[in-house]
Every structure is written in structure tokens, then in C-alpha cells.
Length: 364
Image (cartoon, rainbow, N blue to C red):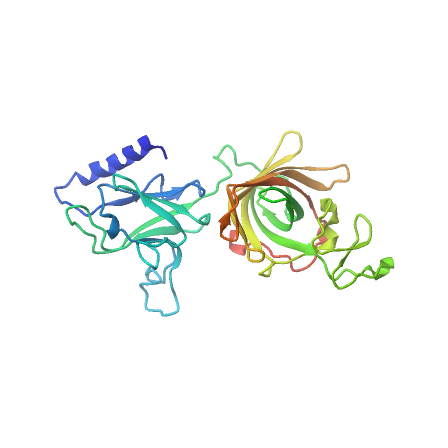
């Protein structure tokens, strides 16, 4: 949000508070939120106040909003087995002189806007909340005695009502090759179980790491692979290193899913597909974080953009690009990520069992 809009938003808040002679504690509100919804999960989250605050009285958390049957937050209920799912905390557990938990927060010079740059992208879909803890004061010492709960969430949409159209794009499992150009030269292989709502084009996909299948036996090709090798069948039978890149998506039979950490991973993708006049399909997803334990890599806000079409053999194929605003190798930022993708739909009778499916409650 630009500075002019920020000033206008604060002015509205100040005008509202001036309707009464009561001098209230600083009123917090989330900048840019409309009917509880924000649209850009990659933008910094900003909390504003209708008047300057005393900096060292601000304590807050961003949480995934979960309550018991009576509406109590998980640190307010009677159970010892529930706890808040804290996504960000200011100050961190060690106090104001140490880093925040889950990101970095800064208060502007006027002490009215607190900007949070988070280490990970907040989830899209679930209800979230900022908890402003008791003790927040203005310069006159007016202080909040109770917790303030500001609910919000991120919503990914396939567009406005005119953009939501039926699609003939089929549900199914795809084999994707993501050839990374930056920040390092490597390849990711993914098995993507994508479920499509044919009435709207909305997609929920579960994208899972794929490794070369160690169960394939090269003996039938009169080859004997040693313990450090696996059998590759395409484009020609050969004993290769497990890390050997795939050449094309048609090599899906040589790969199997691996969702189990530390080397395996799986992530849920919300996306949309649109039918084009030339018979192709355009695909894009909401940004999503990808975390790998070993080697330790975090990709923040990855976004796939691609085009699909049926080829002359009636096989659905896609290609495109992906971007990510930041990639961490361990805890060190290596800058933005970028590369190309190619993929194809696997015939249903050739899909290996056990590939993770999208969460049942998110399937459109």
C-alpha cells in the first residue's frame, strides 16, 4: 500500500475515534484488508494505529485461528493439550533486543505503522488472526487491558465472476520436471495430483517430490546395477546414479513419490486453469512455500505459470515457467528463483499407488 493510502486509512481511523470524547488506547487495524480478506500473501503485513504508540508496549502474534467449541483460543481454553499455532511473534521469546520469531517487524517514525516482513508465506485459505496483547499504550498512558483479536485471511480467486468459466481440463496425476536456472542449476521432479472443478476451473493439487524408483530391476535388460545405482528404462535401459536428471516428462515410469522427510516433501497448491480459444489451457497458481529438510532449502512463494494442450497422440502436455521471490539455502538467502517447467498427464492405469492426494476438505 502506498504512503498516501496509508495516511488516508489512518485518518479514517482517527476520525472514527474522534466521535467520542473518551481517549481510548491506540486502536489497531490491518492495512489493506477488505471484509477480512487480503489478496497478496507475498506483500508485507502492516498493522496501523489511530495514534502513536509506545514502541516497547507492543506485543503481538500472528496465529492460525483455531478455537474450542466455546470460541476460546487455544491458550485461553481449559485443555492442557492445545496451544496456539504461532506463525509470527513480536517481540520474540528472548525480548525486544533480539530477533522476532518468524520474521522482522519495524515501527515507522510516526509510531503508527508496524510492518511485518515474514520469513515464510502465510497460508492461503485458513482463517488467521493478529493478536495484540494487553499492555499496548499511547503517549498519555492509555492502555489496553484485554487482548485485541484482528481476524483476516488470504483468498486466492480464479478472477471475478466474468472470469470463472467451465473447463474441460481433466483431473489426474502429472509428472513435472522443474529445471532450475537460478539460484543454482538443478532439476526437481514432481508428481502432481491435480483435482479440477469443471464448473469453475479451480484446482487443488498435491505436488510431491519424485525420486528414481529403486525397485526397478535392470536384470531383464541384462544389466546389473551396483548398490550406488538405480535402473533407468528410458530413453534406453542403463544403470545410473539416483540423482540423474530426467530428459523429458515421458520418463515418469522410472520415478516414484517420496513425501517422507528429510529428503522427501509434499505441498498443496491452489490454482486455476482457463480454456483458450485455440484448444489450449492456461494454468497459474497462488504462491506457495516449499520446504526441504535435506538438503535444507526453502523456496518462498513459488508460482507456476504454464500452458497445456493435447498433442497428436491425445496426451495432455504442459510447459511454462516458475518464479520465486526468494530462495534460502539453509538460513542464507540466495536471491530469487526462476526456471522452466515441462509436464505431462500420466495415464490413470499407469499411476503408481500411494501418491499423496490433495486434502479432502480443499478439493473443489
